Structure formats: C-alpha cells, structure tokens
Image (cartoon, rainbow, N blue to C red; front, side, top):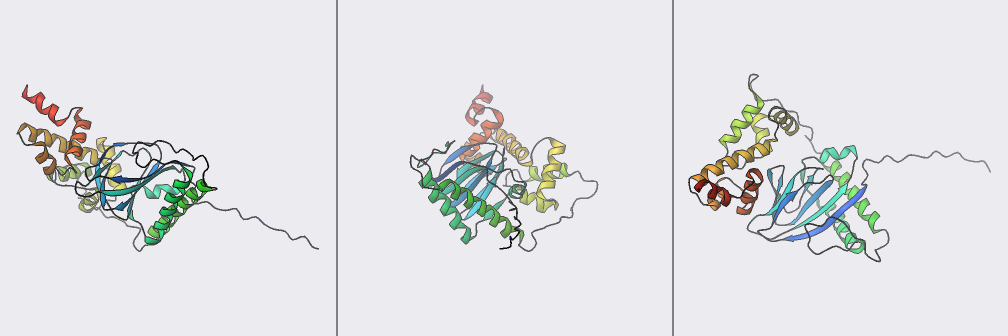
Length: 293
C-alpha cells in the first residue's frame, strides 16, 4: 500500500476569547441606577425588554429592545432606567485581545433574530455551568457549580466567538459600510472651536456624537481624536462640564433640581445628581448650601 502524503491546514482564527469574566441577566426597575465603572476588558450589554440608558464616556445612549452595545476596555460606563418602564438586560464581560475587536469600538447594533439563539445558548449554558446570582450588578467573578455541565465553558466561549464573527460579517457586508467624509468646515475653522460653539448652543438639548458628525461631516474617530488633541478632553466630558456649569447657574437662580435635570436633558434626577457630584465633588444640595452661606 502506497503511503499518501497529507498536508495539515492551519486554522486561521479571526478572534479568540481568552477569558470570560462575568455573565448575568438583570431585571431592572424603571428608576434603576448603576452609577458606573471602568475595567480593562470588553463588555456587551443586550437589551431584552423595553429600553435602558447607557452612559458611555459621558455620552447618553438609548439602548432599545433587541439592540446590543459594546463597551471597550477602560471605557467609563453607567446604566440607568428610563424612568417609565421596567427592563431586562443581558451582560457578559470577557477578555479578547484579537485585533479585529477594534471593529466593535463605539458600536451599538440591532441584533438579527438568528443571532439571538446564540445569546440564549450562552445564558442557558451559563446557568448550568456557574452559580449565577439572580441579581448582582457588582458581580466580579464566576463560580463554577459543584457539578457543572460537561463542556459548558467551551460552549459559552464558542457561541460568544460565533456571535462576534457573525456580527462582523453582518455589518461589513451591508452596502455603504465604508463611509468617507468631506468636511463642511472652512479651511480657517478650528474643529475644536466649531464643536464647542455647537455644544454651547445646544446646552439645553441632548447632543450625541452622531449629531456632531452630521454637523461637521467628520467621522467619529477623527472628530474625537482631533478634539482630544486640542483640548485634552473627550467631547462628551467637555459637554457634561458645560452642562454642570449651566446647572450651577440655574441653582443660583433658585430653580428646583428636578427642573434643572429636565432642562439639561439628564436621564433622571439621580443621573443629574451623580454627574454633578462627579464633576464638582459635592451634590447639588451641598452646592446650594455652600452658596447660601
């Protein structure tokens, strides 16, 4: 019998999940507040019922039912209820150092129906593999069950990798996925001045990076990079500082805190209070007392 020579094909891995950090499914009250955190790994939040607000780098994003949002490593974020409806979210945090993950920076995507099965499998396997608390937003580690389901960890890893790969396929095959911008700005305009002027003009509105991109015809990455280089601050942090300065003025005028939060388009009074405290090191009430002394 003649020996046949075989050649081994090396599998190319588009991305590899190195570690799963946390997995949880949360039922949130309408006035739920998670004031925020940062961590050096990826986080995915999927809204399974109604809607929630996710604050990312100071920018308020409405996450609707069926949408998924990606939070990149070291990106400050917080979660708030919408003040009207109870909501459900699925959260998974993980370590993935594959270069392709840069595609998901700043992404908020409607999840196609066929990919929801992968999420359902991850949740199902997680319940059979780990001792998951019913509700714990401060969960910081996964604990294996005494007798976990065989292969559960690998099934979770594989399904998460499939979810990410299919999402990249889904998004990059859409017509017009590559967008090129021609700036609307005059050559003498400084981009940071244009942005600041626009933010000040809309201090009593709710401006997003998408609004600024439309206003300037810059892409998000270019816009944020140029602004940070010139001012040392992210756009949304600068916008929040402007809002807090405006809030101080309104407090001095004697307006109620609820009215100020509403006028400046904060998600809720608690969101306004926590943001005010983050930027001034005192609550609105403490600030009001300090100016009355």
